[in-house]
Amino acid sequence: MASEIVLLITERRSRQHITLPSGKAPYRFGRSPECEYVLRRNNVGDRQFTIRCQNDLWTLEDEGSAVGTWYNNRYIHAGERCPLQTGDLIGLDTNGDISTQEITFRVEDIRKAESDNADVRREQDTGALREVDVRKKRRVLIGRGEDCDIQLSSDRVSRHHCEVVYKNGRFEVHDLGSTNGTYLDGHRVSAAALENGSVINVPTQVFAFTGGLLHYHEQQSGISLELVNVYKTVKDRNTGKPLNIVDGTSLAIAPNSFVVLVGGSGAGKSSLLTCITGSAPCTDGKVMFDGIDTKGNRNAFDAVVGYVPQKDIMHENLTVEQSLSFTARLRIAHDATRTEIRAAVARAIAAVDLAGREKTLISNLSGGQKKRVSIAMELLASPRLLILDEPTSGLSPDLDRSMMELCRKLSQENCTVLMVTHNMSNINLCDKIAFLGVGGVLCYYGAPEGLNGYFDVALTSDIFEKLRDPAQIELFREKYFTTAEFNELVTQFPEAAQEADKRCRK
Ligand SMILES: Nc1ncnc2c1ncn2[C@@H]1O[C@H](COP(=O)(O)OP(=O)(O)OP(=O)(O)O)[C@@H](O)[C@H]1O
Ligand SMILES: [Mg+2]
Image 1: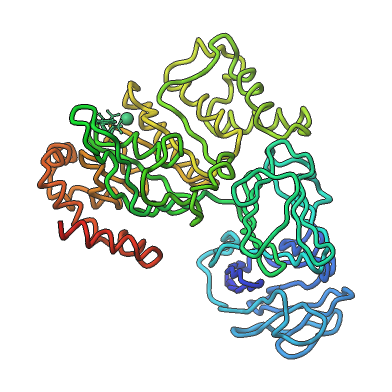
Image 2 (image 1 turned 180 degrees about the vertical axis):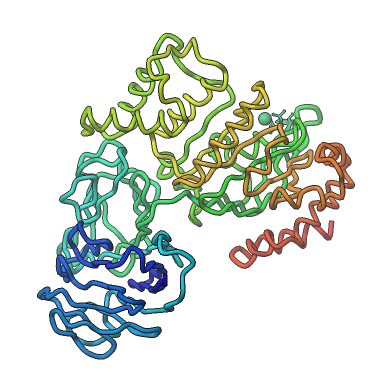
């Protein structure tokens, strides 16, 4: 009979559940890449322990490495097999004190499984937040190279990108001649002293420094985007008076989600996008990436935000591959080898489903294919937030669908996607819709399924009609303040609620 064991792996602040089916047992845990579960750390043997299942009996066996395997309340001998049941604890550290274990494996459940051939499943409970003690290590080397203490996989990171050192009681960050720069609190630096609360950015990775420790999220994912009371006030061309074209927008976009921004013509969509990209910043309020205010930190995030404008900017007389190779040389680290550049270009081409068209001249591509090349160019920089302004306008309905599917796919990989569109036919493919009323007022932010019910319309197109009426816009602005999405944001940013109260009293 098939069964499966569920382990809760706790490593510092990171917790992960893995479900191991009996059909694929045994599972070896250790430093060797041959292990099914590789533990990349120094105080672990190449083969540390093995979890087996025979006749529905799950067992733990120590593989005789120099480091002991801890089982509930003792170390086990090499070759000893211990039965595993719910609640059992496996640890690794050498000093016998379970509370100081760096990593523990707790048996959460052993249960019947539907099939013997189920896949190993991993569920991240919290992002893998890592920390490195700079005081202990004295020098922490960060880069793409294999010899780095913190190895980053992005092509935009140089082999030896920067280092954090502890010398004479001071902490410093030194850029090591990287191509794409090291930023401290938003400013590009070659060498600078660190203080508690300093934020270091290198392409695709943010480090927070405090108390001698560097903290970072190991798993690369899309950026979260938080807008709190964002306004853009301009001088009205006709009356000369101040005019809000983005009017107090507050919303939170989760990492790796695909959000579509819609609204009538002139509603303020492009204006809101430029507040986010920073090309025309907001006049009031906060735009945050990963909870960090972009004001003053903008440069540090440039590298991770990709923007695909409405008009394609490409050289028509180059092939797809040539065009992308030129861009790659500008965007990825200068110390990248030809093979690395070729691989990056091939990855970008595959990501936008243009494989087979490498040798085609840009001038011979269709509108939709050209748009895909524009997106591939942005993907070369491994963006963690991709912003697209009407990428499907003028495309046929089938191309609109495939563009939406592409955005969905990108969001499931390492990117958050925000896209402006006028086409509502395929909006069920996005995670959330932000609907703007004329005057830059956010009237709805939520799942596509909830849209028509929220506005009490039978056809989505009727919403555009409704949101031309200023009274309706105010009504739905206030209704948004009562939604779960808004209230979730308020728990993090109470100032959004204060502003909402003010707006409602008006
Ligand atoms: N200085 C200004 N004075 C008056 N109105 C302005 C000024 N700058 C922008 N606007 C108006 O702000 C509104 C928002 O413009 P925006 O380009 O953001 O709209 P949009 O939603 O992207 O529209 P579209 O779908 O047509 O692209 C428009 O009505 C525009 O005319
Ligand atoms: Mg626009």
